Length: 567
Image (tube, rainbow, N blue to C red; front, side):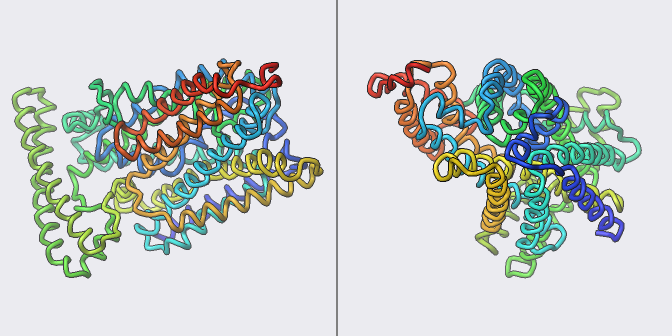
């Protein structure tokens, strides 16, 4: 990067850290540390919710996902608005009425201690691992593209955000997320504008969309039903609904965001606005990837976007063979540049016959390019069996580093840090709150002072931060990071949601029946995933329904105690 890029990067990150520490003044007890004394207005709640779910993975991996697979990933979010409505009706008023710190406190009041402990443990496992991946994801890419040491990048990525998260708790997280999102969306808008601006003078936004559409990158809606298809409208609405309901209703990293609101009304407004904003936001991020695909039709693209990996292969005995493939790939790239101009001209004159001919020729050349890419991946794997041959996560950053002007590169790199910090800080805060409230205070030290619990909250924030950095150091070969995190969540979210569904709607079912239903359902979900029976989104619905059905059956084997029946 240029000196100007470094100035922009360091200045942006420094401002965020000092802003977070400044906003964190006045933390005196757990209520202020984890809930900010329930003082947040709805728009801060909304931005905090978005900042928690929109990690660096969203901004790094989603454009690459659209580049390789089109925009059908957006269907993943189609069930989210409906889930927000259900949450506002059921979850929010219950959590606010009971004045809980974590969602899992309610489960002991409704069931028993072991069910509460099981649900909180599932959260800690899933969120701890996911947060480690969230640290590792941008670190791997930044270290590869910029030549930074991976381990030091992980430590810097995780270490700097721990400063204001430990110091400030929920207030620092929420207000820095708000500031971060302003910078992030401004930078992403500039990146999208630059993609179009850098295209040839006779190609505007409309023409770029037309070309992208003809190359099947604007495939937003897929109506064909297939259990194993990860992204279609059915898995998006049904599986996505259960996933969103569990994530926003039972994952403390999100529950903790709207528990900070001034009232039930403010929480509901934040969630409902999130339901309205999230789908178009994700659509626009994916659209950038579709436009980047068009950009690389007009300009030279590497045969593999992780060029640091290519450089390593060049130094091995597979190097000469790789160079030959790159030369042939470059020749096809030049041919595609001619063919895409012919396609654009045909689209401009609206000549259907010419459009069909030009589209077919371009697709055939692109298919040949993909075959060469496949051969290159084989060479990469032959030179290094541990190499990650999925370059989805490198596509957008390759465009940023190699095509954008000085200064803007530093801003986009800063955005990666900020997006990572926003979601990771919220995760660390929720991991600490669950550990202190649901484990430490409940099981080990129930009658300490508020000052003691505040100190333990900061200590556990630090401990979880170190744990996640350690996980990041061992994570690798992840593939499409946005998929990996969502797959990991789908292993646990459906079962956790099932526990809450039984708690809310099956009032006669007791804790023991629910506990064993959840254990069996979790084992079944993992078996179904490893056998590849269905795509991962369906695991959320399957896990939830299994818990509910088994709880109804086990209710007759493990009837509730008199205390539970009285609730």
